[in-house]
Length: 418
Image (cartoon, rainbow, N blue to C red; front, side, top):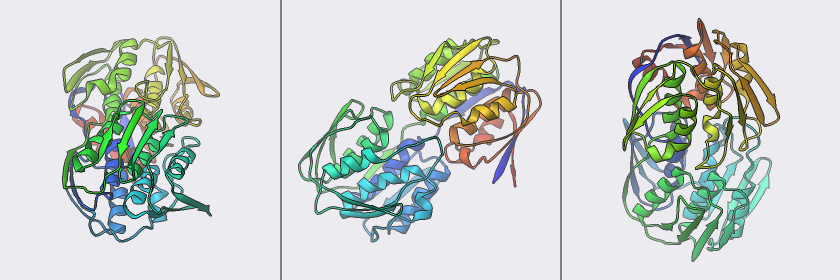
């Protein structure tokens, strides 16, 4: 366990480079097991979740080599179908190994996943889709034993555009007999990145980024090299850091199209944003304006993973803002910690009413989850006095060297081991 100690009040200035997307690299690493081939993946972020996925791949028999931000995976030696419980419980994204392992081995034994406690995230959509394709799934004592005598392509209508269920279905369908069509599929950029990686290896997937994805099953795969897209949530977090500190920050290695919803709300809050193809400049306002309504939605709507950061920003706005969380039920845990720092926030079910205060004050607070932790860092950057944030392992799951990058922009932040 470690802590961040932040002395607030510094304006952030300078440039920051955005690393590869956590929510893209994890499904891609899971997909490396499918083809009985070799993969070289570039732009890998240095994150705890990536380490866990590496350990899983090593455990099931893959050869994994990492050099800086490059990972090489050779899945030809894969020889296990059991996924270690202690690793799965640390990271929710490990559940996408179900589809990948069924695709490769026709069998997998995995426990229910862990990860941040941000409300119920049932995997019933995953299981329903896999069963439609012919998987037999036994649920017992927190474990899922999945078997198949050969998955069959079919038409799958998702009840909700779940990212995880879409990814799991794609991974399972890659080697299935015939054609699979996923309707009401998630449209996130990370789905497109997964499609691009798989198609480079020999898969036949069409339509990622739309609500209808078609997968034609194949049996042969080839060596593949692929570069992961930049992390849109990390980009959005640094944009909000610039905004809350009245800073001026250039953010490099971004996909502008992926962050349009974030840009729109920051402009409403008074930010000036200038962009070109792969970078942007954010100039924070002298006075943060309230935002009438933020409603989290599946992509291309406003991302739930940016809700907490925007709450921190709006806590010192010049009026009242409304935030409606429609994706996860229990994603306002950071509000009570922001209140400890002087924020005026009322939670009514899935709605937060944020009345801006003149200033926040430093306090001892605790990160309850990944993005909630990021909101406390934001609050600490703007607060008067010193803020100490514990449980920073949550942030290390999704932000590469966050303290170092903020210090390079002029923030007074240090990481203290405990």
